[in-house]
Image (cartoon, rainbow, N blue to C red; front, top):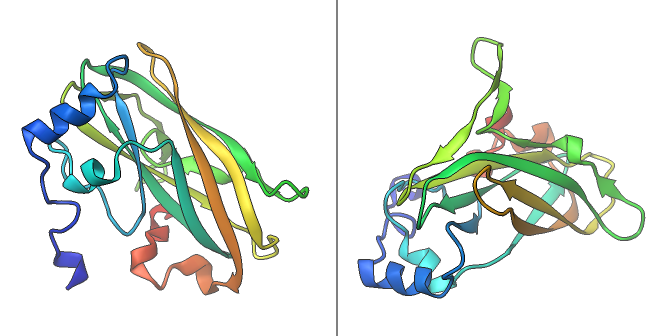
Length: 193
């Protein structure tokens, strides 16, 4: 099934391909790869060839329905040094016509939330050199949200390096999802549970 497939996220880039990509960014100690929810980041030591093909991008583009809990991921690759105490900050997104989805609607499931016993947690995210940390992010699109293209950004701020800014471009369509999309597992929206 699609769930059991190894491609494209488990097709490993060669050492030479990774070196060539990292060599294009000599001033950066870490690289951030925006990734769609349909392609969960599974490898934590090897870059997928998919990222080599696409190259480094600073924008995540997605399409969400109204009443959906929309999920995506950012793959942080610590290519030169350990990246310490990464904080994820949201600025919200807006369509430029006065409609917005506030920063409070966003969550990074890796750094804080409620655990399976109902206790709040706040984790420090540190990524060792040569490792990849998937950062799963979700936000709620209201049932009454206006259709249109919403833009904003996510900022990753490590303690020991400069911040990385990832632009968000989310198209909200007219379709209204039942139960926030929980019935379609590929949407990954159950992460909010």
